Length: 139
Image (cartoon, rainbow, N blue to C red; front, top):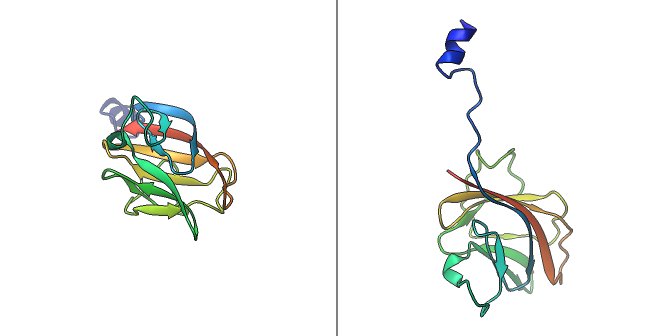
């Protein structure tokens, strides 16, 4: 019976979604990230425009935020998940100061990819640069 199920594809884990990009990103406060392009950039930088951005890192008097742009959506970092498959991104911004190494956020990007974004350093109020590790997959 196991051979029959295996022959028709049942009983096997589905293959992972193909990776579009992955790696470290370092972004300054006030700048933007495009996860599928694996780029951090600031307003006025040549070669990429705001229409390509998924999020902007912003700061106000209450803290530092990751804010979705261009139709992207975020999920809160405390949802139980392993790879963003069970995430339900609906937030437009998430406060990230106070988060640190290993804390994660799921993002449905503006170009319909899924990014699993991990902080690789502590984010303190007044942090000038924020460090992320990201894996973006096309679904």
